[in-house]
Length: 343
Image (cartoon, rainbow, N blue to C red; front, side, top):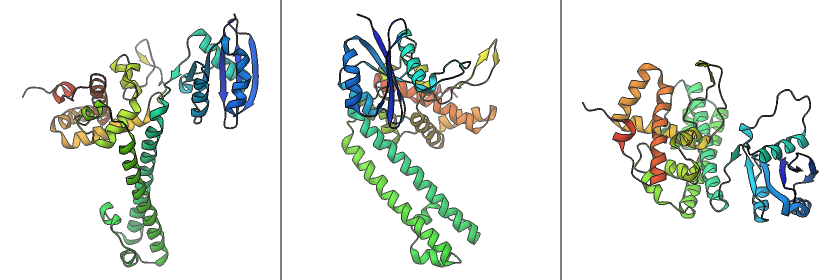
């Protein structure tokens, strides 16, 4: 029985499905509307011979990957950021892209992404939505700060902004139009703040806290929100055989290309998890502020380079420490993580 390998080029409203055999001959090729029943119907005659199906890691892969896995197919999520076709090709299209995915699978060189367990995916995405709302809240807060400073010449603190009443806004600003701009932004700001609290409560009631969660709280600079982020974004730690692979996934290592000891440009900075990258940078900033030993490490690094690189160095240290905390479920040890020197 001839083995088949499938590639699916997923779009917003349709998918191009290609099946190839071991000689890379196309056995099936068709553009199908994004309807799970129709896709499964087209694949059913070949199911016994299909060794695996590759789906692009696009924004809308959940329904297709879950549906194919539920139907018994071996599904692989292609890491599109790590896949590059030959630059010399004159013409490519959706069919050639799907065929290329199938060929990579057949050759055993397909860069894959992690298929996060369906049971926990919704809670993780809810936490991501909370992060998005926090960014929007900060944006609105800065907007009010800029409006007040521009029109009055006086700076105003974030805490003061949050407590402003409509009457105080009208007294503070010179015109009714500017006052309306501030009050409308304040209304949005407070609505977002309420939703953030609601999401946090929902996340805490729905998420199943793993034992490692309590250990993450022992890490310098990490509170409940950052611990939840790291726990939910990490997934299964068994997929990271080494601490270096984990640090790379957290975007805490340099992305460079070297040849004969010389730098030849940069690699793909987008490989990895941007949410973990954010979490460890946040943790690094808190750790530098409240832990003298880490502040000393930061200052030594800053003296040799500059602040951004120094903060990233602290984030890298924290990420490496969290690898062992999550894998072995042990508490954080400051002396080991930052190699404190005897005075």
